Length: 282
Image (cartoon, rainbow, N blue to C red; front, side):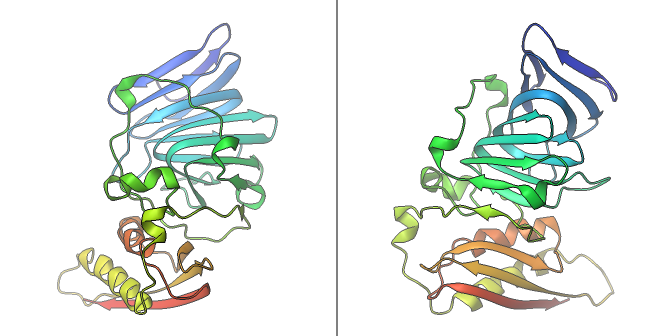
């Protein structure tokens, strides 16, 4: 495939494959245009739908699906994206995606959605209109795609679903959203292995120390004093588990991914909202 290519699946499904990286099935009656072919594959979905199995990547995006000015960015997952006019539906059965405005360069900053999830939004304003349901029965069943694109195990770094808890230590990391759009997210149950963990009275200190460690590991300037400061805003469930978190100002994606591993595994002894100021000097 080359930049600008248009793929129209008229009488049958069309399968696009990058061996060991991804398999994408473009459904019959659908049309896509290739807007980026080097590195991450970016497909602009004009009509219809597509389903993809994507091997996780350690950083960046392996696949992105643009619908109008909005983007569904894939880090490693099994998902289906479909559009009817300006209405977009995403069914996520594995992994994590980011939904937001399509950036000119760099990674997509928007709503982080983790499986299982059924999401709907308007192509004109993804972040302002998105509605996410994490009920498994609401998620469209995944199609069987090429085994060449089966994902490697990933470490859970977003609030885990009950089916993902047994693999929580071996799943790839995913960034914490750097913005807080108006998103309605249904409550997610906490699995038994996390639910039995007692609250930690030093949870705030533990999270702050973990974030500082992630920052310190990624300061590379020589002969220069570097000071990094940010505030971690956390929304807690009534049982003390982290429901969502964001950094303001945003931190580097690899710091995001590193810190998320500790943030979502720490249980506080209260609910509500919390702001944790973090800084590191090198």
